Length: 544
Image 1 (cartoon, rainbow, N blue to C red):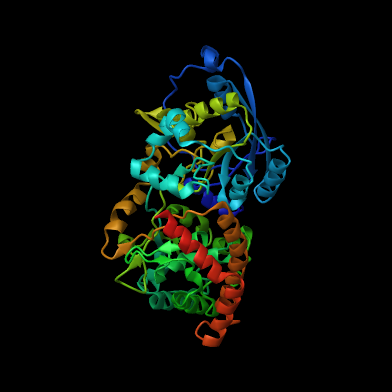
Image 2: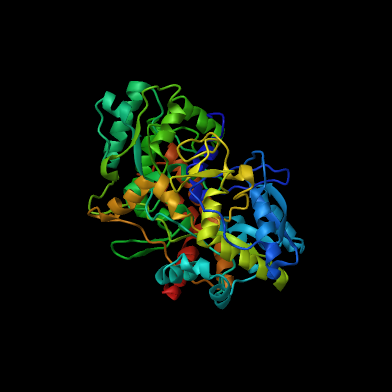
């Protein structure tokens, strides 16, 4: 199992975040399966005159990795229920955004995109008129099951947050099922062996990890960056200093205590303390040296050797145990008692509060015939129904699960969130396009009740703790010209931010030195910091 990339192993137990696909040859990665539906009572397409005509719709998907498809149950379901045939052309995840942009710009793009993402150029596609908008009245009339997923308050926030500058929605966001599911975890076996308590402050974190390193020779913190920013590897520590860990995505946030808007906080005095901490982590060897450039294989190899003893995660402890069992037979990963978070300010501890939605979902190409649009909307409305949620979360009885005492139970051949081995839903063609598992509809509640009981507990315990706050993602209203200007500016500014932050972390610059800090601020201003702050502040005020 340890030969698999660590990112894929993580994806097996992070289904709501997974982005996977399948090639035409029948290869696909997979999220972990989840409890699902009882057999359908819906009429088949052949028995429904509404779907008498077979429709073929072109589809494009992004591939993360590959496994063999034994039987394409989704294709059979689409044909039987809706007389639909998806003709897919898929690309590797790294190439997919560029390929899609080229295809759409020449008019050859797919009619249906199972999921689109803001960082995958979907904003550019909206701006260029490549995508068909979902009108609000159309959503209400054609997708009632989708609207039922949200409360009125949630949908109002989601609609305002995901609408384009023309006020229209060009994709259908998916709903997150658990509002809080991130907590600290550590190797209790090592901490107990060397008499180290779980740290409550940044200074205690440094001291605890130094002890573990000195006693064992292990690298205490191992986490890779990713293609959007090398700083993702260290973003797990942001919350200790009052910043949301998603600030690299958001760039702005609203303080949950003061309601103060921070337009670009990673280029302010408030972030220097965090850089001092990260520099000590790096120079003392408490984190992997090549965190900014390490591949998943390199990271996985270090973890398999026993490195990495503390992390903030949603991963099941049993899964982390499995990764290191071979080299550490007594390994014992466990959640921190009462889900306590280390913090530099006991009066304001920041925890990760999930947004109502994920900024990705299905989209339809502009110019797609109304006949095909209507059929796709029928399909999407079914996918968001109780039956559709169950089917996409669990699969088909007899193929991926069986009923035991009235409860859907995975077949012994299937992978689960606590056992990565076995067949996965895409092995049977299910969720290749990721309509489920974060791509459109919410997972069926049976999944969380069966596999996420601890995380459901977190959602009750963590928000109720004194002085614990979930950061607020701000809502903006940009014009099309403002959005284009902001994207161009932030591309440069984020690059400068990453460059200087890395220099501060590795010690090429000193975050405590005012002269070095001024070099960063001057470079950021030259890259458009003040313009970004003004654009974001004005758009935030307009959206109020």
